[in-house]
Image (cartoon, rainbow over all chains, first blue to last red; front, side, top):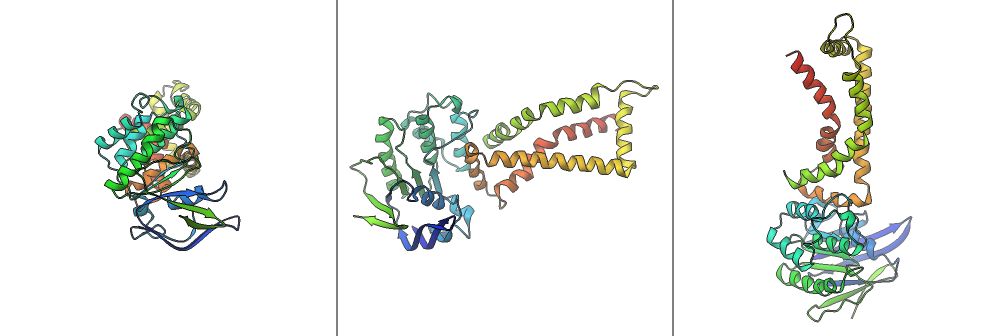
Length: 209
Length: 132
């Protein structure tokens, strides 16, 4: 369960959004809003990457009071991920697997699902933007986090991966009760997913029915 | 080798030595290459007298400490610059390793002295072996 209490964020003293009181259950949420509405800011804030005012609690753990325990529960895939050119994909996968104490069965499955095994031993400098995006998504699914944040997960993905992603989200939500919050300008089609839509508008979050 | 250590060596250690290769070649040339036998003094005596000079002369000792401090600050800055690079943001995940320190503190305490002070440690070991 994700709880917000008197959360507000400003940039250069300009308010981005304000959430006085909100509770999100472990469901799947699609964050919508125009460019510049604060979707990436909201996700970065939830990932514990940028400062904000107020309190955010995940499964009762306060991000401000216990940032380490909070961050252990959250995985985040950025909209435009960047990695050092000289590292290989497999090094990053093993690194995340080691730190998140994930089983190699899980990472092998993810590698196969994203069809990444052919590229993983190559340096990331030789990857296309789509392959880097797939790698960042793969890394976000390693482990059993309570919350996975995906910023524009469909951008630059090939058709195969676009179809896999909703199935993967559904499987994690059912099996691990993982909560998902993602932003996407592209249509997110899946008949197996029950998606709650949230609109960021006028510096506030509104549920769309 | 542990994958985290391998990754830290690739992201911090190798670039550090690559970037500072010229400085190390210059220093090793000064310390070991250009020393010749003068008045019967051997090559090893040169290092012995250098160490004696550092320990006996306060000004020389303070100068060495100052250079050491500047070198440590330079290596610290190198680590901080890497941590703030957008393509190295994945290193944030290292904070999940369990240390109560912040990521830069943890790296300062482990990686930076390792990578920065190896040449100094090597010189120390060399001198200890000579005069053990």
